Amino acid sequence: MTTPNQLRDAYQDVKDRIANAAAKVGRKPKDVLLIAVTKYATPDQIRMLVDMGQMDLGESRVQQLEKRVAGLSEFLSRKRTLGSASTREDIDITQAATHVRWHMIGHLQRNKAKQIVNLVDLIHSVDSLRLAEELHSIGSKRDKPIDILLQVNASGETTKSGVAIPAVIHLAEQIDSMINLRLRGLMTMAPQTDDQGLIRATFERTFEVFEEVKKLGVGGKYFTALSMGMSDDFELAIECGANLVRVGSALFGDPEPGEDEVD
Ligand SMILES: *Cc1c(COP(=O)(O)O)cnc(C)c1O
Image (cartoon, rainbow, N blue to C red; front, side):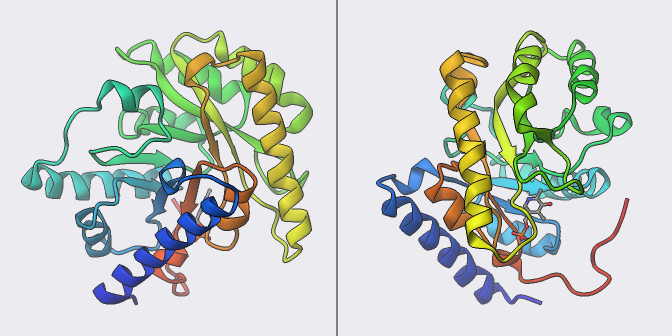
């Protein structure tokens, strides 16, 4: 269990490490957006972090996300920080926001997509044409397109979801033709390994295909986000070009046994 002071220190430490990693490759701290992954956090910890100015929050499970959003929105309406998005934020999702934004980062089943589309600002985990089509159909009932990232499996691990590298461009083009979706970039997860070289290679391949899609003009001016890096590897990801990092345990501590509930 993390105490308030530990959380404050951990938050500052993560922000410092992001700034240092960015500086190492000639980028500014504000070029990298931190998403605090709250799956192992307590409601109190989430409120504290928002009070410290952390606006981007991420969850990996539908049921947990719904619970978190509901729990926090009551707190936010008391604080009145739930403003509307500015136009600038709308164009570049990698820029800091002045209101809380939720990110869906975990695997999304098609039959659960409807439950979360209106709760989140960005879905990082679109990993198939069928899920994209489902979201496109849901999106027809909204007044604003659904912002998504295409999840790439750059490590080739069969246990990981995501689109294989050779299929990325074609799928990105298909998604780009769906008017109820807005393709904002790519997401990847590093392989489960201590081999830093392998992790780096995964991030580098994802960066390459990100640049390729961008060069082709797919997604247009909205295609700006590269989401990669977690607690163990976010510095390496930033060196390889990530501008969104998804950090959980480095902020909130490691999960206690049994805490990882399934929905
Ligand atoms: C849990 C999770 C994270 C954060 O992981 P940590 O190692 O705790 O930082 C990032 N991305 C996804 C998709 C996750 O499920």
